[in-house]
Length: 452
Image (cartoon, rainbow, N blue to C red; front, side, top):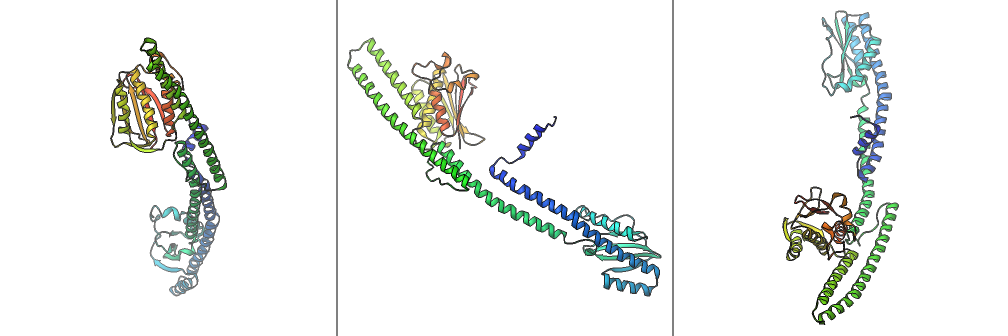
């Protein structure tokens, strides 16, 4: 696979956090981490190594003095004075090892220790090589507090044990510790502040989502930064305007319902008092169809009608809806866990499922209804039939209000093309949706997805 700049950009985008909290934390923590790493690198490269080089050069000079002093007067008395002076004035422990030779090669150090002392070894190696003419050997890892240095002298080996702080700066780890503590402290403070700001946005998002589902969010209050509070106040104003519009629409629909049903009732009463005839029977049928159409229009316009959200057992609700379809002559099979529950508006969901099941029963001989948990969370209710189905390219057209497809599925003499539109309106009002696909029974499958 060829890596292009666009592909690399997409890969980087996938690796970045998706939440506002994660991105905000990255914006603050990443510069802090980069700064700390840069400061630490500069400290070790420009300061720590420089100080270590100076200390190594000073130690190498003292060792060179000791070696030259011994070579000038190798007598035991002179060496005793040399060792005493070196220990008192230079903190060097010097011992003569007659007949010994320098060790061959270097002692193997632990894997985690050797890389840390590599700069020290290089600095000390350069300093000793510049000051000593005799062969030498040293080890910086054998003793925790000392550096072991050995120099070849006539008749044997001079061994010098020097304090570690004479060879390199020993306070570097304290600097790193303070940098680490400062990074953790700053990160903790950043997390606290970011968490408080993101929580206000989450509250606003949850309130907007709950309002979209029709739930009561009267307890919501603006929190957070000035911009977030401004958005929250705008949401509260918008919610009030939408609620006022819904209330006005509900009042209007109640009046329209009353005004339309009153003349229909009078007509039905007059027809009931007339002599039986073919014309009277046809008129009664027309009135029944007109009443059904008015009910569908009002149901579509009314939407969810301000119904409260309740916890319901889906199996019981599906059984109630299926009983009505069975009484109408449909063959319905139901599969659902009796303990499966969901937070829904019962009447609205019944209306949606009734439309789906009756639609399936009209166009097929057998209907299968199943409810189950979704792996992504929430629940789904599927309605399958063995009818002729709908072409895949017409799935979205089937949800259009007052829309009709081919004669195979849509010429219902009592319908006006609102069944699927009402069902999807109810599903989306719950924060879910309805998906159409090909059924394993050969007809249409309608899947109602509801959030958890």
